[in-house]
Length: 151
Image (cartoon, rainbow, N blue to C red; front, side, top):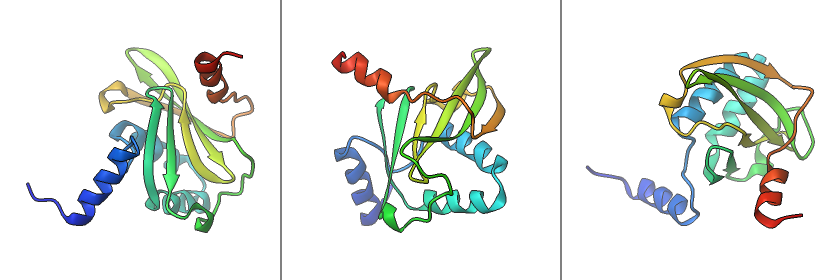
């Protein structure tokens, strides 16, 4: 198998930063389902953001995946400001249970997948509803901080 120098350096970048250079197949399936539910203008903005993806870290696999972009300040934001704005929740069936993943923005840019983030494509038996702009959202980061560091 041959690999280009550029791809090799991209791989090394993700390896040393303890992440990957793209979302996994399961995360991509969730994203595709979300993109299909968004209004066309917002779908296009999010697609452009995804083209600039540099790194995905999973410090708590299955609970949170964090996206980092090349020059995020140059990316057009979605029209939803705020530090942690839940753009959508996406439900899916896994082991005959319904699970829900939240897609969270930071200043209008994709930031995290939170709660029940599938690690493997075979965890998703079927996709369910996409709820845009859910009224109730609690970030998982506070829970993780409390578990790791106490109060």
